[in-house]
Length: 106
Length: 104
Image 1: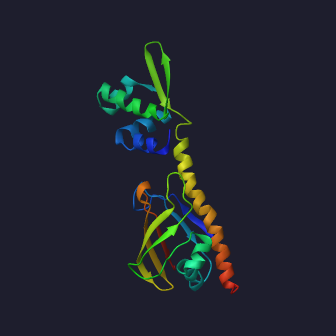
Image 2 (image 1 turned 120 degrees about the vertical axis):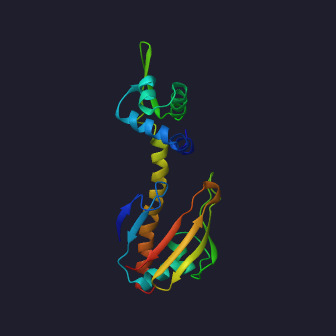
Image 3 (image 1 turned 180 degrees about the vertical axis):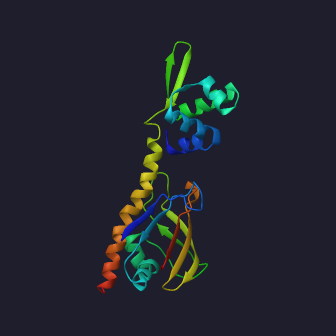
């Protein structure tokens, strides 16, 4: 899964809140449905979208299926951010070199 | 040179990554590194910058699978030796890098 899919999945107020909630505890669909005040089909749809991006882990316990946020799921997004952090981390020492050269009249 | 703040959501909201650096050098020296194409190219990317409000220029980076390497920019504001504000765009990535430099 790439960063675009994750941004799209989390770019919805309810899904982002569900994901944040599931980062703290493991819950089943009916508990989530109650907590977020949406219909069960709507919640199932949100969970499916988050799962498609590997943002959730699923555990079956009897008739219940429990969801929680996947620790690895955010990886592509973290990589995406790191790419841009690395860009400036790489360029700024070069700026310092150029500044030093200007000072020395090179 | 030290990093002051990173990923500060700032006033522009959640969709902005903000990286801020403070430089110890004289503004006149920093100004040259930011506004002379050859010096700017040495540390950032090849470009055709001119510190004139409204001037449109490009940075030419190394192309990748998802980027043709071009950053389209425009000079927004110039106060020689004191303040430079540029707006940029990487269209198909939907990114708008903005570079602003100012004296304290």
